[in-house]
Image 1 (cartoon, rainbow, N blue to C red):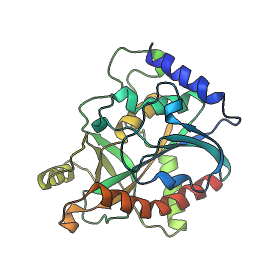
Image 2 (cartoon, rainbow, N blue to C red; image 1 turned 90 degrees about the vertical axis):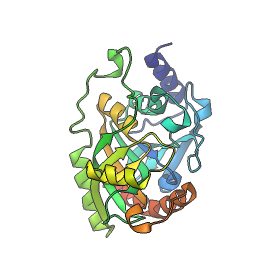
Image 3 (cartoon, rainbow, N blue to C red; image 1 turned 180 degrees about the vertical axis):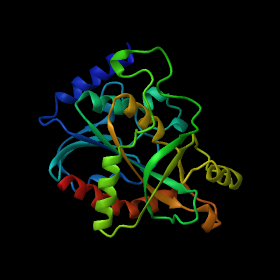
Image 4 (cartoon, one colour; image 1 turned 120 degrees about the vertical axis):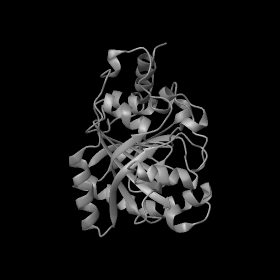
Length: 270
């Protein structure tokens, strides 16, 4: 069975259970599973019930699609994402993006937890991603081309939608939520970075670093989706001077996630 056929099968399964097709998709990052607390839930579908969907194995990731209304828009929230370090193939990691595109999504909001690469970014700060540096050892578009999946060579120079970025930043200012704008560096993980690696990533132009997002954004570009990416900085090795644990990452992300919830709800209420 081709990847396209798997996407169609998942699409048909989902559409049997939802009455209102969503307009916007959201991916909840590590510790950000409560991002949809304002949603008027209409339907929940477990990943394990959807054909060809993998299941997340990381703390802070649930494993369900939540459909409902948030503000003035119908949305679907992907609670739980898949990571390269879990052993998944790139096509598995990005499968949910293709499926939400198949059910009619035009915009996708991606959230993640990240580590700071600049001294002025503090734990708990929000960073709007304007670009990325891909240091993953694989690409989700590698392989035999199927034109039904989208462009073979999608441009990545404007993948982060400037209009969504400006709108989000304006709303953050209105809500008195401090924020930064920066470049996200994607690594495979799961080991956290050494001091020398943090310094290297800083020197090549990174502002924050994480182990997700980039594969999903690449596929979103192929699917011609409008992308907004919001990162929660969970630690700053240039300031903290102590080792970071995944438990601390999850805890900081949960606390800072309240700001993202307010921001997204406001965006969808306009």
